[in-house]
Length: 253
Image 1 (cartoon, rainbow, N blue to C red):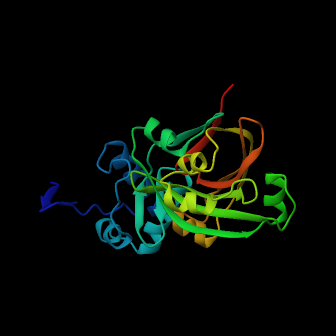
Image 2: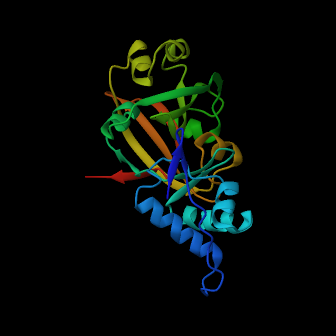
């Protein structure tokens, strides 16, 4: 029988069968998939460690790792480097709209938005950024890099670029204001709209995988966004990266 010691679920030892003609790792993956479906491990819940599963099923850790990799490739489990394996949550649908705002997107899913500023600096615009802002390469821009969280779980890693010459005081505004929308209001941009969104996909580098707590073998969705004020003047160029185990991008008419 299952039981609890304090707050820890004690799972009985369930050795896999070595004469069934089915690979041991596949038997383990099937059992874990069944337990996840039965609610033993809820969405977002942490699975037992490789060592604990090895003891439970009486197999070596390589066999357990193969089973977890299979569940990860299928999108049922996500592996966070240095933290363990977790049951995948429901995918958040990110709807691209004229006024796409991070906080509104997260609250639409009944989750609490928050974020962490990783960098805020003035720098020279590289050619792709300059093209997005419709300015000369080397012109001064303010770059804000931010990690976006939903219920404390990372769902976006974004870089936002603002033209210094067009938005006087934008550095201080971004430093003081809680959101980009409020910062832009401070420098005279009362409203802004999404003009262009381009989407590509690629594998994350090690830093991105670490910040977004995702495996290196699952792709990122990368968006390039151009935002304009009511007069059609570009006020922001952004590059955002989303972990595909947790986010999908939706375009609606």
